[in-house]
Image 1 (cartoon, rainbow, N blue to C red):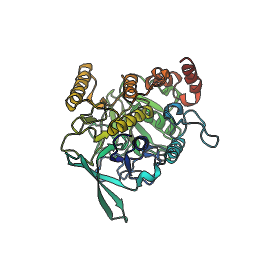
Image 2 (image 1 turned 135 degrees about the horizontal axis):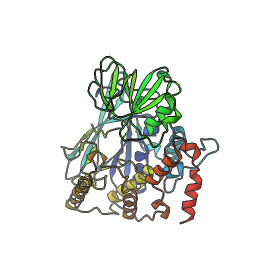
Image 3 (image 1 turned 45 degrees about the vertical axis):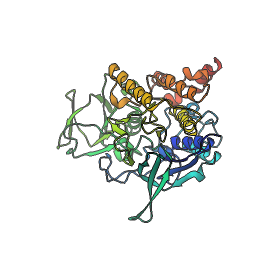
Image 4 (image 1 turned 90 degrees about the vertical axis):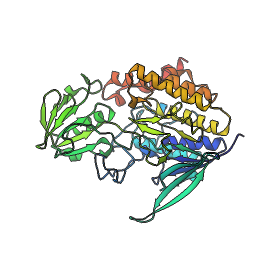
Length: 439
């Protein structure tokens, strides 16, 4: 057994649960702080929406989950499994290859129960401060609060030797910027606060975006809405065929919005709309982290972080698990958690602070030379296999050869190849079996 530390984990979603399990396996003493009263993080559906539907008011009561009621996974259950804990079909559950969100939540609840994680979790504890108070003994104060009554909170400070931040990335909305947005009189909301389609009946709706949320919401509201206008960058829509919809039209991005309700698009077209839904993604938000400016969020880059996980000057006592996207996230999260736990126990060594800092700088320079925008720092769309293989090697894990072919990018190609109904028309089980049998 290696070294054992008192470690705080922030969040009990996918990343927090897997991290807690790996830390416990390495003999660390683990406390998980979770704002909600159940595990699941973003997979914990909440019918409530925020008071500010655009998510711009910093004083709003934040609703963590971004799930809409009908949401199904974009990836099949096989790649939402863990190395030793498969996401199997259950007769009493949702057996579809791309299940609904309720099935993912049950999987995570089973995972937490089966690995004895529930007793590690402080439910109803919102973390409001994480701060290094002693650099020599690497002591961190974690201040959390619990709601005693509707208007009264009770705060508590505790000291830990290490902190792993796993608070997710789908809570703080990123909204579109255009002249007149703040004075436009209609209803505006971010997809974070979309739940069901009924309120859009007979409405003229503008959807901003062309990702999975925009596609799903378009399909769901179009039977009820009077008109749906999709504003997006690019010359065509690959996933959804608007010719299948007699009340939906594509547009270029919004040029401006007027106080009389008109929305003007860059292509010159004008729509008098009732609703604008921003399906424009999220931004990383770490208001509780007090690091004296060592770790910052700049244009959605959390940094500097060695391999997206360790701030060089604070490693290994502060780390992040689950920042990456455009990847098979469950796979990446598990590998990151295993590495963090082994680094803390001393079984795996990190490079020197100087070497880690140089690696981060080199990565940033490569991004700049390639013209890759800063806000895509944590996207793995170009190097998912390489990154996952590197992480696996750090912990002496030999991943199956099929990982080289079963990637996020290969799923994107399959999704585009099968169109908007891919969840029901793609025999993804057969596709995966053929790849795995060829290993």
